[in-house]
Image (cartoon, rainbow, N blue to C red; front, top):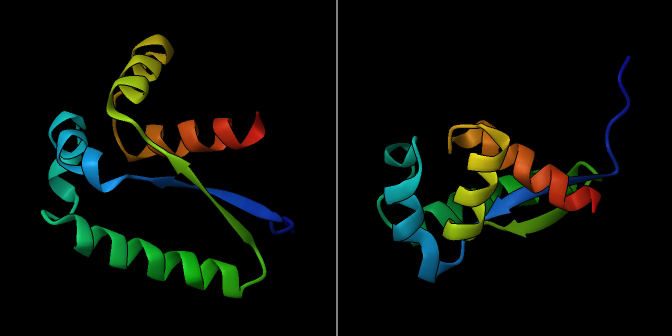
Length: 92
C-alpha cells in the first residue's frame, strides 16, 4: 500500500498569464476559456486535497519559463508536463 504524500504541487496560473498559457499549451483548449472559471475549479480541488490532510503548494507556471523547460526536457507542453514541472519545483 502506497503512503499518501504530505504535500503536493499544484500548477498555478496567474490571471495575467492565463490567456498566453492557453494559447501556448498543447492542451490549452481543454482549459476553461475564462480565468475565473479555471480558478474556481482549481481552488475546489485544492480545498478537497487540503481536507484530506495533504498540504498543497501552488507552483506558478509562467509561459516563457515553462516553454523553455519543456523544450529542454523534450516534453510536450501538456498537463502531464505541467504536473512534472510543478513537482520538480516543489523538490527544489
